[in-house]
Image (cartoon, rainbow, N blue to C red; front, side):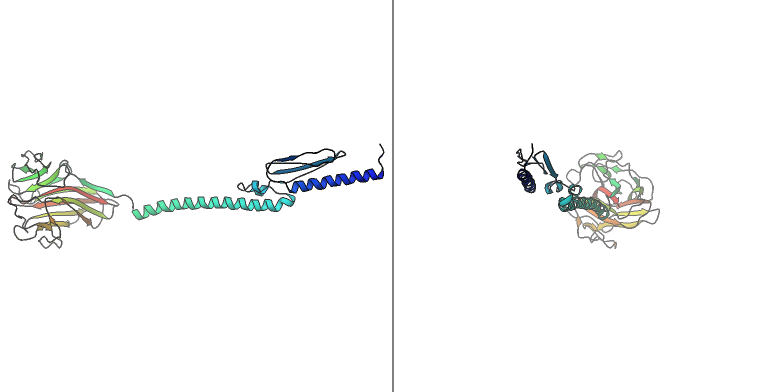
Length: 337
């Protein structure tokens, strides 16, 4: 068919109009799925999931254009940088920058969390110095952990006459270990002890040469510092309800490190020449002067042990030589870091 010049001109104008319409539709496309269709020179526009595509046909002519991922796609964690061509390059770059910022923030947060965790653990370890190491924990379940000696450094044994003269391990009532002697009934004499404890009254009443000595020998203190000792101590009310401790009566705790000389850690004595209270002798002048008077309810005493080394021997020495002069002792603990 032969077309006139006017027909060709009209057809060209129609195609130009269709292309212009397609471009306008493409620029206005949003993220919602939209489909508009037409034939014979009417523009068709389609968009899906952030991708914009336009096409038109007129007299067998086809025009198409495509764009990259929209800004919503690029915001999804650093994928924006991979998109963007032509006119959309700037938006793609911005999206990429945003993604990098997000990723950077995540890495920063992770890094801070990790570093914080490590620093926290390190700080706790450093400031706490680690858990203390127990060197000795004597609860007097038996007498296997220590050596018993008399005042002449001769091996000794526990004893009891069943009433007022005894040295041994009591269960707080009528039982215990007195190396064959009849356990005294000391029910209610002491409070604050749980289970067995060591007790002594009138130490020379059955022939023992005073003082009575107990030694925990060659305890391992290798690589330990900040040593300290703690224990519970009580003194029962006298049967006549009077005080009975003299300045000559004493209970002494000493340590020997690596075979050196004994060092006095703490000592208790009567606070008057006769019939006084049992107190710590804070200045070691032979008279009890501590703020706390030892009584029937067990009190806990704690003292630092100066020095360090490889081995430590604890020596507990007691000298009480009359009836109603007594003590109960339990839970001797030595620790270090």
